[in-house]
Image 1: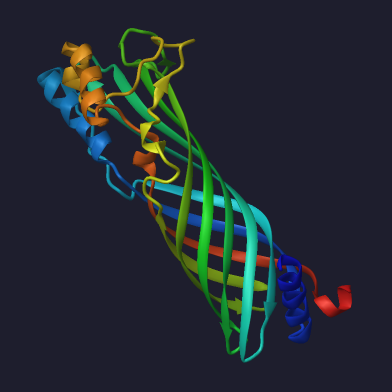
Image 2 (image 1 turned 135 degrees about the vertical axis):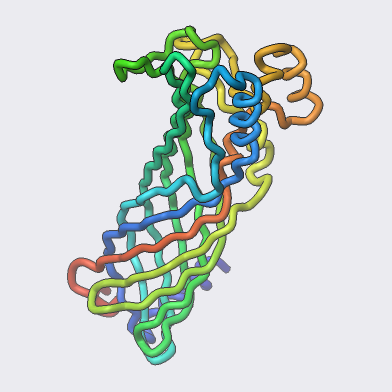
Length: 279
């Protein structure tokens, strides 16, 4: 049955003389993440230390994280008055974001985020008037995350020393799936598009259990990054019990998932050959 279906698809593609094209791709992404956990940390840290801070942590905003993406892919399309298109591509992106708090002695702590994404994307839909593309989108993201807590001295040098117990390099890995819509316009060999996507919550199962854990070579073995700093500083056993009871005591990797707005461009390279020519 699968073989017959594949043959029918090939015959249909040949009948409409679909074109295949290799594409170089660049995107700019605005990530709308859940920052409640991070803001729980910054506000509790600021409250705990109070007037010993000359400049407290600023609050996080949902749109703080942006990410350029670059990659390569392929697209098949038949640009009739009412045509069709589908695309498969792979992209790599990196995002970095930092916030600092300053103590009354001019020493600072820095909270630095590093997000690295490997994304695999599929889109497909219709072409109107040979130039306007309307597509549905499905994608998967493999993300390696880093959350570093440094001490910065007045001379500008950074340290992960245990002068502050929280110092360390916290990390986590997650897999996420997204769905959404994409629309764009073709101009010559350029396809310019916009996309808005939504994450699939609680899939894969148990991904929300993955916490940001410190590297044992640098900090304390098994230390996880807290949401409630006051509880972390005064009663870490109670914080650990809160995690058991609520699964909401530490920063999780899926806290950084959220809706994504993307603006991108595909540059089609090589000769645009139809499938008939290739066969």
